[in-house]
Length: 157
Image: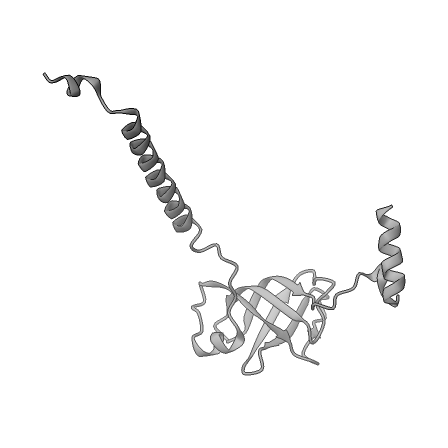
């Protein structure tokens, strides 16, 4: 045997091998995480996309858009509502049974999680109401900018 074969790798080469193994493990972990989360993205379909390519009745999807003005109709049972979601191009009728979020109003943004019914009505299992960028908490409504600033400063003291 030669002397170099019995000594093993030099420390410089050991670090290079360990660094290479760590890099391969890190890339592998990233690819595994990306593969596991591929269907967990919070993507929603617009009404025009639903109309163009309607999902199957067994496929759960999210529908996002604006609640059409004058479209909210409460049913006599008190928990079911029907409304229309639109994106300026297409409209999709939606039915929801349950407690409606406080921010859910006509003309506001909404994301409905559910399935497309065989009759062309989207049956929502969950509603997420979206507020606009001008959202103001109820406690600060009607206050001027100066009053809001003073209120915020008072809470920070």
